[in-house]
Amino acid sequence: MSRNDNAHAGEKPLTRLVRSGRDHAITGPFVNPPVVHASTVLFETSDDLLSGQQRYTYGRRGTPTIEALEATMSEMEGAEGSVLCPSGLSAVSTALLSVLRSGDHLLMADNVYDPARQVANTVLKRMGIETTFFAPDIGADIAKLFQPNTRAVYLESPGSLTFEVSDIPAIAKVAHARDALVLADNTWATPYFFKPLEHGVDLAIIAGTKYLCGHSDVMIGTIAANARAWPMLIETHGTLGICVGPDDIYLTLRGIRTMGVRLDKQMQSGLEIASWLEARAEVKRVMHPGLASDPSHAIWKRDMTGSSGLFGVIPDGWSLDKVKAFLDGLRLFGLGYSWGGFESLAIIGRPRRTAAPWPAEDHIIRLQIGLEDSADLIADLEASFARVSNLS
Ligand SMILES: *Cc1c(COP(=O)(O)O)cnc(C)c1O
Image (cartoon, rainbow, N blue to C red; front, side):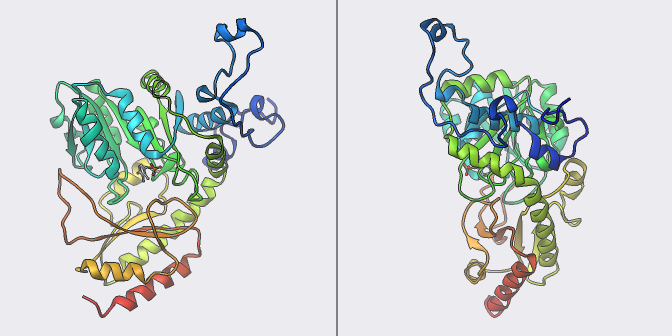
C-alpha cells in the first residue's frame, strides 16, 4: 500500500473529506484535479471514434473534473454512483424523474423545500403522477398512505424551514416492503453528519450550493444512488443532457475539503446561539433537532452524528411587522436566501403545507449561522431584541 492509495478502513469523517475521490490516475502529483474546459474530445483514428472504448468522448459525457467530484461524492455517500446537476433543485427534479413513470403515485413529506413541492404539483402532475403529502413525523404509519401504484417516497430530513427529522429507517422499511424507492434531500446534514444510503434511502440528494461549496458563489446539486437506483439515475441524467461547468465543480471540490471544519464550527456556534435564543422571553420555540427540547431530538441523536448551522426561531406572539423590524435591525446577519456559506443570514420562513397546516401566527425567523465569532452574533441578536422591545 503506498501513501497515495485510497484505502480507508476505519478512517474518521474529517480524514475522508480530505481524501475521498482523489484519484492519482487523474491528478498526477498535484493535490487538486485539473479544471478541464471541454466540449470536443479528439480521437486518434476513426476506429477509435467508432469503437466507443475511449475513456473520454464528449464534454457532457465526462471529464477528469466531473469524475473527480462524482468519485468524491460516491465515496462519501457509500454509493454505487453519483451524478452532478447544475443546481440543487435540478438534482431534486432529476432524481424524481429517474424513478417515476406516468400513472405512478408519489408520497412527499409536507416539510420539503417548497420548490420540490412545486415539481410535484406542476411537472409531475402534468405527467399523470399524483402526489400525497404526509406529516414528516409519520414514521411506520406511512403504510396507511400507500396505494397499489405508489412508486416512491420523497422526504427532506430535517426540513429546511421547520426542522423535523423523519424516521427514515422506519419509512424505508415500509417503502421497500412495497417495492417503492426512497428519495431524501440531505442538504442540511450532508454526508458528514448523516449517510442516507446506510439508513435505507435509495437516492440521496444534496444542494451542493449550500455546505459542499460553502462560499455562496456556486449553484450545484448532487445525487448519489445505491445499486438498485443507479441504472435509473444514470439513464435519465444522461438522456436529459444534464451537466455542470468545470469551474463550479472545482469550487465545490475545494469546498468539500474544508467542509468538516466549517460544519464543526457551525454546529458549535449554532447550538450555542439556539440555546441562548431558547432562554429568551421573546421566543416561543427554537426549532433545532440538536436541542434536547426539540421533538425530533431522539431520532436525530439516533441517526445523525451532528447538526449544521441552520435552524428556526418562532417569536412569541410577534406581529409580522415586529419580525420584519427585528430582521431589518440586524447588522451581521444578511437578509438572503440560501445558506451553508461562511456568512450568517436570516429570512422569514413561510411554510406552505397541506397535510398539517402551519399556524398563521407562528412566524418563522430562519437563521443560518456562519463562521463569525458567536459572541458577536449573539450581541447582534441581543441589540435587535432591544430595538424592537417596544413594538407589538
Ligand atoms: C437550496 C435548497 C435546494 C435547492 O438548491 P439550489 O441549488 O438553490 O437549486 C434544495 N433543497 C434544499 C433543502 C435546499 O435548501
